[in-house]
Image (cartoon, rainbow, N blue to C red; front, side):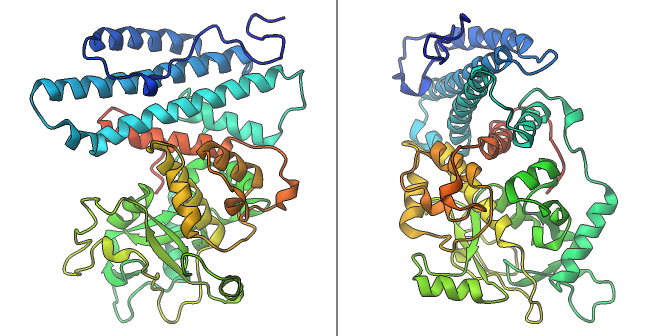
Length: 430
């Protein structure tokens, strides 16, 4: 029997994962010393967290240890910051509500999730040589190895988009959504469907809903066969005022069907049967967020708060819309992302289940990934999100952590940016 496995077939890890979020704040502890020791631990673990000819259970166990150490790092650095503020006589409560503090909390939690996923991957290799998980497993490994927060093996990623693809994508968005202002020879004025106003073309971003940097294989795994052909089509994007695109990417808001919060079955059926389908904005941040009452773009007086519940305004002669599956993907990811920064976990999901922002069932995404997502959040009644599964819910037997790992990569990148740490960009997509 392996010394890493007990009689039940489960891992008896040589290391004992710490639970930094459960430890009380102790002013007598030398946090600086602990931080230095943990930094050395991370440095050592990185040397051992390298695959050999293949990804063995030892590799995944070391990856779990490294994730645990990184969670400890976030806890310690947040505690050090608090201690320094206290020593300076500053208001710690104000800092605890800041984006910087939230980034530390989020980093800690996402590394804890990654630790669990890595241990699951190790366990799966020891489950008496079961059949490999096929393409889904290969996609998972590609995500882990190519991420700048994983092994940083860049050659396995999709790489940067071809300039021709960028140009074609932008042109397709302008054409399909009929966004160019008539009678403007230079075609430098375009319509923003969220702002509901004309903007300079130079102010707009051709935003993917499912990013190219995630890869075509993953796109097929999540959305099913033949979805790869949508990567550079207008159905997988929107042309948005750049600050709005950045807010959407940060999870400030989501785009959902234009229905009441708890629609009746008749209303859902009517929306499903109607073409073109209409969508609206739902603000996800707390009602006290300082940006809510800021003007989005002058001279337009619309504030971010004004967007909540606002229908997307497509040109009157445009019947084209983005595919609901890609908006649903963003919706699910943002619920997961919000849960990273919550104590206790799952409050956002409970809020969503009470309001049912996305109340329309459909064949949007792979059910196993949706199931894993809801299991990770810890929400009860996950059937609400599973209504968006490609398969019938009864046919979903196992969970697939690929979607969670994808969002961990995105969340860690954003958390590092908030903390001001150096981080390489995985792609300039979106």
